[in-house]
Length: 183
Image (tube, rainbow, N blue to C red; front, top):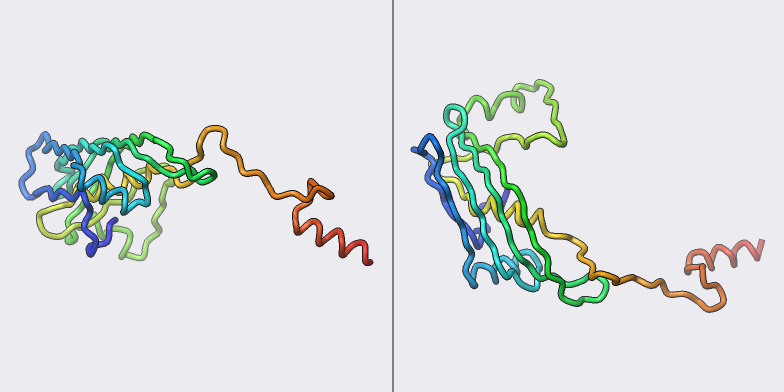
């Protein structure tokens, strides 16, 4: 989750004390200033478009389930050529929140019992205090997960530095060859 000290550029506090049974739809369309802040926060050249469509609904007795999608068009630098590359992000958003005093939130973790986690299964519930949840910060987390950490322009390749004498050898292989010749 986002650090409480750092406010998300697309922060949206959803009041969850009295949610309708069918849930409360939330749409976040980032303006130019928010998109610039997102680009700076995530090391991007630009965020051309950012839209999160979420449904904040009651879950079990006092919990809250947030589900939906976040989509964005971003510009990144190629890790090989540093040329700008346009990418599209489309990520499903899903999270469950429980009040910090909820029994469900404490079961297993504090009783010292064994907990079985499925890597492909749902994440464990987050806890919240008060009556608001920052669903904008949640959407930004999923946006961040959708960013390609090593974007590469089509056809861009890294060519290794080679010596004309020993084309297939790198510096380590050359050193090893020299050591072997001395033995």
